[in-house]
Image (cartoon, rainbow, N blue to C red; front, side, top):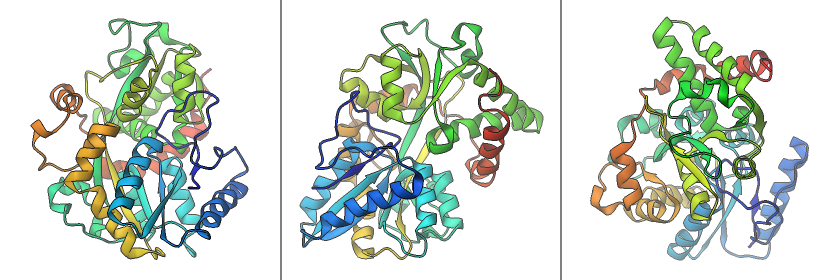
Length: 369
C-alpha cells in the first residue's frame, strides 16, 4: 500500500532507514513540488484499489497512524486509509492552499490552537461525534469544528549516555544556565505545533507577570543564545541528541516514549513548574470528498476501544475523561500522578500565536548568537 511519510512531528526513524510502506520517504523539495509529489503518489495508488480512499493529513507519525489505519480498515473493509505525515503547521498551510479543491478528508492531530485557526478560515466541517461529551468542554471547538482526541504533554529531553536525571535540566529556567550554551537543539518552531505551544506558553507566562510580551520574548532570546540549531523534524532531532550533537531538547512525551521503546537512549523529565498539555485534536475537512467515511474515522478515533489502543500501543493520553484510571497502562497512570499541567490560556494562544511566531522568526531566531 502506497504511503507518503514526510517530516511529521512524531514517530522516530533510525538514521538512514526507509519507512517501508511501499514508497520512499519524501525527499526535501520546493514547497509546490512537494505538494504535487505527495498528491500524485497518494492518488495514483488509488487507481488499482476499488475501496474508498480516505485521505488523512497528520503529524502523528507511523506508529499511531498505522495502528489506526489497520484497525479502522478491519472495521470498514470498504475503506482504504491513506495518510500523509507532516507537521501540524504544514497541515494547516496545505489545507489552506487546497481550500478550493480539498484533497484530504481528515485532519488528525495537532494543537487545538492551530485547529482553531483552521476553523476560523472555514477549513473544517462541524461534526459532533458521540464521544464529544466525554472530553473537556474546552476540547470541543467552536460549533463542533474539531475535538480533542488526546492530551499531549511536552517534556525536557536529554541524552541518557551523557547525563543522569540529576544532571539534566529540571525546569524551563534551567535551560538558560550557561552550562547548556551550545548544547540545546530545538525543533523548528515555525513548522511544529508542539513548539509553537511551548513558545506561546512562555510568552503568555510573561504577560501574566508583566502585562506585556517583552518578558517572554526576552526569555526566548536568552534561549536562542543557548541553542545550537533549529532542527528540521522530530526524528532528526532524536538522532542528533543520540549522536551527542546536542544534549538537551524539548519535545512531546509520546514521541519520546516511542523512541525509548525502540532503543534510543533518551531520558526525559516534566518541568517542575508545569508543562503545556496540548489538546491534540481531530476534524473533518470541509467539503471532504468522502465525508461519511471521514466522520466514521473521527468517531472511531475517539471511541473507548481506539483510545485504549492508542494509549497501550502508541503512548497516547486519552482525551476522554470517562475511561477508568485502572484501565490505563502503568506509564499513563504514572503520568497522571506526577505531571503538573501549566495554566495556559489556549484561547489567547490561538488568537495571538501566529503574530508571536512571526515576531519571533523576524527578531529572535539566530539573532542572539
